[in-house]
Image (cartoon, rainbow, N blue to C red; front, side):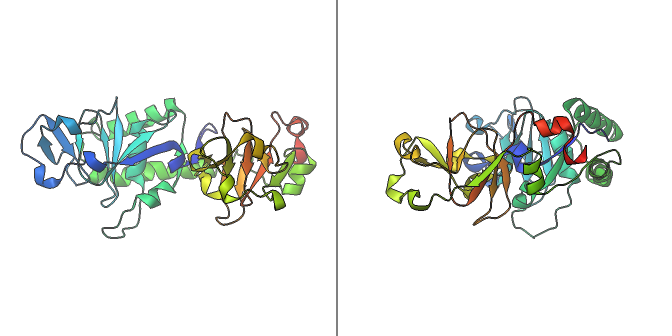
Length: 302
């Protein structure tokens, strides 16, 4: 397995939303119509409708996922979604076809009629380069008789898909040529791989509730970490004047943010155009130099 593959948490590379008001109730599905109704049932097309106000255009393709049935569907043409399906939009480095096959390979334990999608969101997903993804899709499509995934009944082939993806993931994580090694925080500081780290313990300068405003300098806490990203839409804000009184726990674009209080463990890279971001007491920032002079010297592993 090439080292160009990477692993990412599912919800960091796939944007999702529910079918919501676009979900056509089963009672309104017809036997004929201009648009297919695609839901989370066993059949790819479960009905037809003329409701053009509910039509979704994949532009050019997307994936649907049934949280109750754990079924994925790769959609290439305009359609109307059934109720309670997830509409999945892959990031620019992930194709819908590869996402579809990956979802079909997952063996999520059944929880009855409960929504299984929260389990999917936390899955670690192997992601090859786009060219490799397309090769894998072509290989799997050909193996299944050359029938596109949008119309194929792949139930009898799921074992093959799971074996293929599982084999790729295992190879990625156990590549004998890989040089995965670990080091302590003290070692990283010693070798200048981390140049600074500090939490947002502001002491007497901790902002009061009435000091937060609608816009300004973002104030980030642990609940802003979503997957491997910092979601600034969840942040509170301080005025520039108030933020300028805070001397510690000030992060910038590219810093690593670690949640050490409340929700312990999540880590994300801060991506922001703001000049600075103020951290709460629940998170710590780590500054990584780019490029690291220690890495040029080989560091503790050199």
